[in-house]
Structures are given as C-alpha cells and as structure tokens.
Length: 465
Image (cartoon, rainbow, N blue to C red; front, side, top):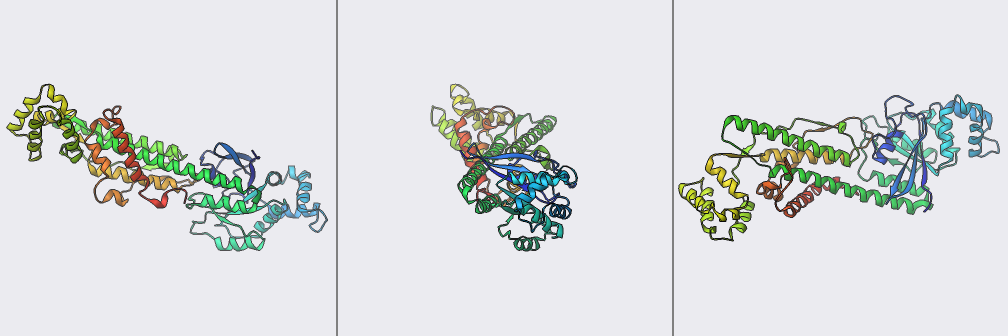
C-alpha cells in the first residue's frame, strides 16, 4: 500500500483553510474557525480514508501574514538571480534566525509545503487581489510543489472570482477549483480531487479510489437518512391513544401526544445531525404546531379492511362481524351491529386481532386519538428540508439551519404515500411510547418503501452527481 498523498493547505490568513478541512473531513470539531485573523497557529493534520485505508493526509497550516517583507528578506539571503533554485532558497530561509522569530508562522507553512506532495492554496474571493497575494504566491512557488488554487466563498455577493481567476492564470496556475466551504456545490468534492489528479498524475488511481469511496459513503448516508425519516413518520402515523370521552381526559391525552411527537421528532433530528457529522446546535427548530389530534374515523381505511378481511376469513363469525363493518361504514354502530358484536365476543373474538378493542371503544364511547394528517405532512416537510440542508452544508457553516418549512410539494399536495396509510391501520407498529409489536416484517417493508419515496423525492440533492 503506497504512502498517503501529503497535501498542505496554505494561503493568506483567514481565508478558510481550516474551514476547508472541516468540510472535507465532515468534522465540525477540527481546528478552530473564527472571523479573527491568525486563528491557526500550528500545523495540524488529518487523514481521509478509502475503504478503510488512508489515501490523503491533509495538513492545516497558519496563515501567511506578511509575504511582502518575507520575500524581501529571502532575497537578501539568496538573491532571486543566484544559482540556487527555489527550494534551496526556502531551505536557506528556514535555517535562518528570522525563521524562528519574526517569520515563525510563515516558516511553519513553508516547512510543511516542502514535506508535502502538493498544496491547496485557499483563496477568499471576497478579498481584492493585492500585491501581497502575488508575493505570497512567489514564495510558495519557490517550494517547487504543485499548487491548486481553491476559490472559497464563491457564493458571496461580494465575490471577486473573475479577478482571482485572472490573477491565478497570470502566474501559471490555470487549474483552479471553486469550493465554497460553507455551502459546497453538488459534485464539488469530486472536482477538487479530479483537479488534484491532473497535478499528481502518478497518484491518479489513488485519488479515483478516494472519489469512489467518498461517493459510496455519501449514497449510504443519504439512504440511511431517508430510513430515519421514514421510521419517524411510520411511528407517528401508527400512534394511537385510547382515551375516555371526557374533556379533562382528552385534554391531558392531547398534551401527552404533543410531547411524545415533539420528542420523537427531536430524536430523528439528532440522529440525522450525527449521521452527517454535525452537532445539535446546528439546527434551530421552530415549535411544531401540532393540532388537537384527530378522533378515530379511519377504522375502515383500505388497509384496515384488508387486514381485518384476512383475519375474518377464518371462523364462523366472519359473516356477523362483516355486518358490523358495514354498519360502521354507514355511520356508526347500530343496535343490530351491537348484537352482532355480542355474538362474537367468545373464542371467535380473537380472530379480530387488535380490531376488537377498537370496536369495543366505539361501543363504550371512548375515543382513539391519533396525529392529524396535516401534522404528518409538516413533519415530513421539515425533515425533507433538513435533509436538503445537510446535503449541501459545509462543516464550516456558522449559522444554524432553520427547521421550519412546509414548502416541499409532495407533502403539501395530493395523497400521503401508501405506507403511511398502512401504518394508520397498524397501531402496534408505533414506537412512540413502546416497542413495536405485531408483524414487524410488514412494518419494516413499510419503512423501506417510505424511505425510497423520501430518498428519491429530490433527485437534485442525491449525492454522487
């Protein structure tokens, strides 16, 4: 196995070098990110793996603060027209007393660059192109290592990207990459490594392996995220709470349901943030405007009828119980239906599975509280919005995601996906308050089917493009 490719991340102070590493590593804890200049004072390294093996070693370096004076000083040590080549000029500087004093930070940068295979030169395109940047590039070029300009903050309104591209081209740096560390473009990481491969052709195979591995990881993460959201929605759709038909009891039950749903959504948000390498402080969640729940009026949705029909196909009470269903569908329990129910409250009652308690609730006047479809739609839209935000969010972002939206069309219009209708008919599937029960393989099939809907809902955000 070859040694990892060594990449120094260099540039002027406060251009986003640490931010770039955070986003490439998907780690908000790497280094310190601040608007203050000279935040990074030491060289710090980390590795990127492909299929468990290290491929890329990245080294964060301090910012170069005074390139104009530094270049003048190096010229006094070794004139540019002397026979010494660039790397030799830099080595003589590193051996000087000033490399341990006035230019200590720059010396750390140049020492690391000499020990690396190439460098990412990070540019804040919001800054004007100044003489100090040209001198900075001249000093870095003396190290004799390939430089890949990484244009950061390209989405800012004050971007000067064209001027920076022209300035880079004038010093022979024609391979350039746009990579906004706060909001990376889809496919930006692939383009970064592909551009690096043009400078390090002998390591192209390793970089292609890294690209493939990172994109597989991204796809797996996207699928896993969709499954987390699907599990949330199935839990909420299936949830039922039986409550006496009493105002005080109903009010208390609604409050309990609100609390349970909010807690379940927060657990999903926390899991999604952890999956994408973010912390809980990355999201501002507006209060979930839960409605007052809804009373059970879908006992005979198609899935309920199908499930009950399968059960009722066995046993002598099938005909009588089917009659109960017809009466319920036409507006509620009649005396005749009640008599039919009484006739089957023996051994045959078990054939009605969990529907027995629900019929009994209708007879005794109790209610079953479930979560309204409007709340399901809002939950789904909020999580879908969060997925979109996390997919396009850099790990250097300093502002939180605002989790408050109902704008995703699938969840505003039309029927809810079929797996949620199925969950309505299976209250034992809900993990809102207890461990799911019943046919767990059927529950898992519903979760998987719903996860496919969620993962495919917005192809533009699917990783790997």
